[in-house]
Image (cartoon, rainbow over all chains, first blue to last red):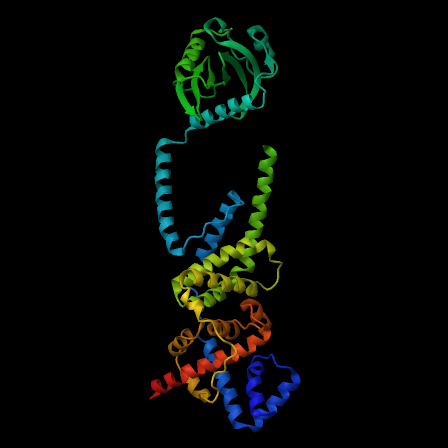
Length: 257
Length: 187
């Protein structure tokens, strides 16, 4: 093998990519040729010098990448078709300090105010009200007769809900149905005023302390809570708050049947 | 409604499995990913950004990874992410593409092996950093990551024959860059 051939093949040789026949010939040439042997030694030294300047990753890189992947996993799970948002690392430290501040503030706020059970219930009854309108399942027992609606609940609930006739006052009884709110079966009594429907949710109160009347507005619906005859009562409707209050006051002034 | 929440539950479990597999098979090669990104961007901050973006990409495409060589798989993503990053941030560095056909004058003598061995890390690092992008890339893949010619040809998207000639040129360029530096340092 000539020096020129050796020079062409020596890189493949030191990389272990040269076939056996050529490797053997090249080795024979290296033994005989000092210049090429010198080139070979120089090449090996260069290889190990380059291998020695490996750049070590910062110690915290792995943690940062792991949490970036985890939060991206959560994000893609939430919006499976959305492209994960990629933030430069230096922003993440800033963002996480803000997030921590928000968390601490929220935590303190929640500790001071306590979780609002009433808010959760308001959400639940409004959702129930909406569902009853959407699925065309307003009443299990459609009747404007209180003496038909009230007995219908017998054997279906462990309590007997008050059902009153308010037709003269402009609230027509539409019917009654079973619903499920606050982790229990409840009575839903439906009234109508003009085109507006009112869902009245009733179940025995488990709370000894008397709650005061409370009005919530959610998604354009009004929900009023009060307590009557040891029952928790929620009236939900798209009626304006004043008319809904009228409805509640009518109920409060009427004794149950 | 219940059906939906159930499906969602199993999706979350699948995601959990995927994440665990990803963390155990791909993340062990993070130091290799950083090393490559560091040499291609020549900057610690940029390298970290590129590695993070590469890992998020890798995670996204992890479903298509069928348990081959995770080291190779991740480095290919890092290399491509680096080039995209350079295109967006330092397009000038990509302009001077190599002409692999030109010959580097080979009559320049290669430095003595003992002399190269005596050079300190900072000197080698500087010389390597000043090489053109493609030479840095191929030297890192071969000398630091131990990639075969075939793997390099796939990662760098060049023909196998080009791998050999480019590697030989990269080494010669580095030797030539080192020779005068070592000479001045050892004077």
